[in-house]
Length: 338
Image (cartoon, rainbow, N blue to C red):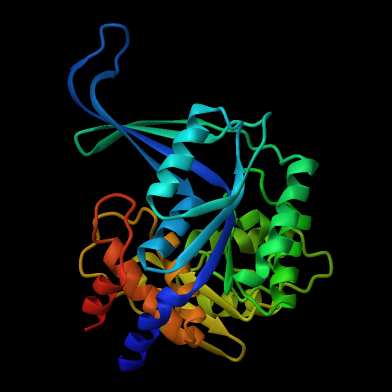
């Protein structure tokens, strides 16, 4: 435990680049007092509206809250789009450097609107484009990465399947990071799993790992992927799947998060189950973002993969005890470890 505290004390020296799909989360808060006369639906009396940068920006927010320096790279819609302006303003308030954020005129900034009455979400409305970004914007992104990669200790790839990443971009980011001896961790999209070869770590949850097994089996032309059980609820099945994914993708490590069952870390020739330390669970929203943020920062501070996983587990145990998509800080982290 003493070593974990020393690692946490060094986290604020880390410099991290988060590359990923950018989302603006809008919440409309209100109350329900009657049913609409127009249709059998509740009428929400709206009282306030709030905005939070989401997607990859939530990972950046977690890193900033833990005291490290973070830069964000991704693509928003037209610079004159109101959602784009709000995203930029809110991200700056959180201490996130957005010089790597690019804009594309023909694209909408992804906006997810949640209407909440009391503590109950009534409906979610999504406005988004999921087509791939243009070649022009892609070249700008490659240039930003090439010009700035030496400034960072680690790169986090946040793939939400919104059109930013394709095979070329993902492979190039990992290749460049490895060439410059940078840590590169991935919060994966299950139908892109074979793009994440050679990463320092990928952090799927149980469902994502199960879906990834189906995807990898379907696309394994050489019949090298040897996992046949897709449901990962028995320890032995989790171990076999984790070891096979680790070897098949030639990863340094694999961290599968298992909700209330904690997480399971795989490294070559070794695996370790880490039980949950959550005292109460109110909301698991964004817990995966906290895991990859804390895990990556701990590696930047010199932690082993196992030490980093324990720190990430403590951090996740804190945020699930808070309502809504939450973050933690080093003071809370040290108190929980103590």
